[in-house]
Length: 485
Ligand code: UDP
Image 1 (spheres, rainbow, N blue to C red):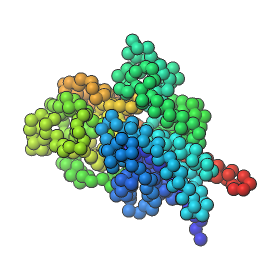
Image 2 (image 1 turned 60 degrees about the horizontal axis):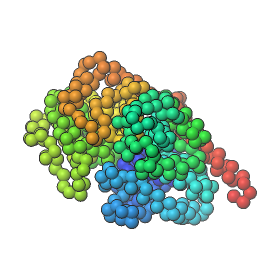
Image 3 (image 1 turned 30 degrees about the horizontal axis):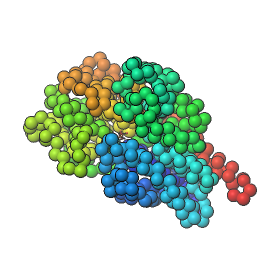
């Protein structure tokens, strides 16, 4: 009889930028490490996840009850995708109420397995409180950080070491993370800009960090070679291992609609000729920025795919057709010339980034988007909107050289001619553009080497994954030796 496989419980926060890397990691662990996975989320998310599982997957999906209306959110609001940006923090805070249900879920799981414990529980960084529950059952606990350690360290330092600047200065250096050099006040989330730490974001951040104090370690979706400073910072701060196991990447074409339309359109374009524009799953630009961006895309003369989402402040419950926020005849003109493809709401991003016609990515620089672009050697035009995206751009532009920032935030004034100038610089044969493409290809090679998991060669990320699993096994063995276990 085959020995029973180890089970790992995974529990992401309810946002696409968290669920996608968690699910990808789950698939990878199941397929490459031979463990079974129990994947926990709220009912509506489980329904969405169900349709994106690969056909050969035996990942067990478990629902955890959640009533958004109990927390002042609209009914059936179970993802940041269903929310305007300013309410996301509310969902983060509401998700703390999942604690008793998660305790029961683990209890039931163990009971059903006749007392057999999962090898470990991997929870979201927002669910650090899972550490206490795991330890109560004698189970190893790790958080999974879907972003890189560098930008998380910047964000952490800004939120935790207040007051971090005097009110007059526009720039400051983080006392505990000087490796990030100077931070400009426009690189801070709007609700962290007050220097006194009384903003709700700052207070929530402190609670989240407090919850993470008893974790056994963390998996980080980045590569040791590019993220050394941030990783060292966190290992020292928490006194626990931070394993850089990234990037975890969904293969192109996994469970995403509209892929065929985009692929067919891209197939008609010359290699390296298309600009892909997207601001991720939850960020939007303002109406005026949207207009300038549209004018810039037309004026640039480049082929483009643009994921059009309602601008900031638009009531997400009403119907959006985009026309009133775009120059007159924009969609029709670009359709007729076949120069631009507008995708509404959601595009098959991996499919687009992996296509040979894609040349550059105008992105908000969410970390998943960054990794997805770089894994195909695509340079980035950065337009960070919030949270750690500002520091992702900092790392990518100042340290790695694969990004050029074009604008910052949702309220800044953006001129279409400035956007055109940056698009030209990156996509035309300028020295800067060539250098960025060369660097992006170097990073693609670093990524491929890091995740290589062959007998002849094991990359650093694959080895970090081994170390994490060994640490969980060790805790299991030690627990068994304690009398009574
Ligand atoms: N994504 C996608 N299609 C879209 C928008 C986003 O497939 O139209 C995916 C993208 O590939 C990435 C995730 O959603 O895996 C977004 O995560 P990221 O960290 O880039 O940004 P966030 O949405 O969390 O701000």
